[in-house]
Image 1 (cartoon, one colour):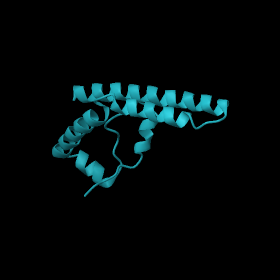
Image 2 (cartoon, rainbow, N blue to C red):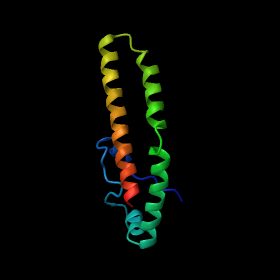
Image 3 (tube, helix red, strand yellow):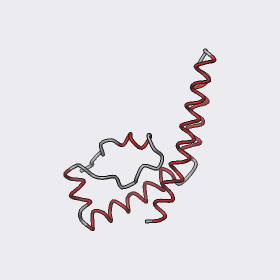
Length: 107
């Protein structure tokens, strides 16, 4: 079985959002209440954290895509606004990367 967590988009609200949120779902809570479940969750969290945030690849790819998309704006004000939002996203990704790598190193 594969479970897709609800609310994962919330990580884009705060780069320091906890890696172990309060689990409200019945199955998730039941798993996290067992030592084995918590251990497996943390082990997978470390693996995924290294995979997703362990390199600069995500930021580099985001920068590449932003440059491609930015060129599509004809209006200078829209282009400027897009550039600002893309910069915010890249800054967010750098902050999230630092936070995630620090958290998984401490576990």
